[in-house]
Image (cartoon, rainbow, N blue to C red; front, side):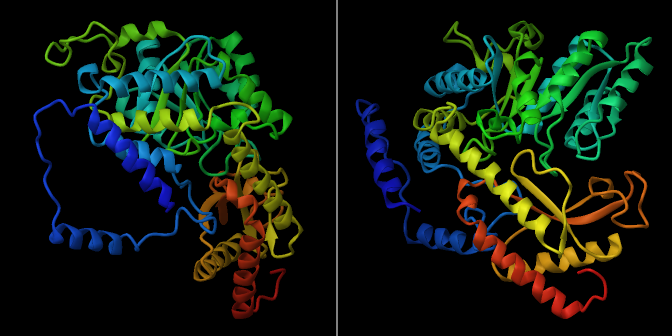
Length: 464
């Protein structure tokens, strides 16, 4: 933890306190030795975590918040604002409006309606709720690689849900989508198609640009779930097909992005955006005890969620001031480093005789691979063993059960068909820290050591 974080925070805290110095003093509760002992216990118990902030942690989607976000959040907690109502968070509400506008501008939305949320799940709930209000009773369709929350949300909202198969690269299958739309055209049953730009399993990017062409004919809403991958719109080193999908975002109807993933924010900080501000009419409600001292816009009037941490808005706003969302800027360069690290790791895995990789390189910064073994069952068991050995070397990866069709057909002779029920447990790495590019050799060395250890124990007779 940088020492200057405490210095800057202390200085800012004095400035904040001076703003209320004219009030009669109300000394805060003092912490004593008992409190110090409890905090020491907390610190000790928090050792029971993986080192999420370190580059050797390359498992799940956990990215440390930027120091300025941590400091701004802590500073705001002196006030503990609630951004549901303007009276509960005057300054932080203004910061939220500005921060959300910066996100909308990043996607080239000339107008928008939106706000922050506690995370992507609630943001997606809100998007699909609006979709259900505008297209009552019509189904929500999403890829089989889309986040599971969409089917759950549809169930909560009482809307039918349809799963669209994905192709061999984990993207929504356009042929399957077109067939679904043609089949349901007469009944006009599909109200919204969820397009995922960055699936949480493998980082695949649905072809939004081509789905927009289908929208022109079949007239459905498009909701973009970019909770994970949205910020990659700033990256300059994406493939042409991935770039085309991100460039099509301005034409979507709604969009979700999570600043607490690639936006360097503490949990929880999600964001929902609608391209048409007129959807605000759907939120209309009357709560006289909440709004009484201002006629200005209340964020609570355009949100399903009530109490929300104003500190999240303050932290996001501060981070945006330090690291603006500009192509070629420091923030964008961090995303480009993550993508470059994923491409390099994929290349090394492809050249190794011990591993099996999908034919296409990563679209974003998530890499997955299987262990070279004669059967998917053997491959899965070896993946678990390598995962365990790598952890002993302080390299923390993840495991993911993925369809065998993501690998070259015939890789495992038992599974030559594209049946989605055929799965294999893969090793998976999320290289979302910019430092991962510099640490790639360290990660690779530990992966090779773990693999060698497993090989020496198992003595397999086949490729591994």
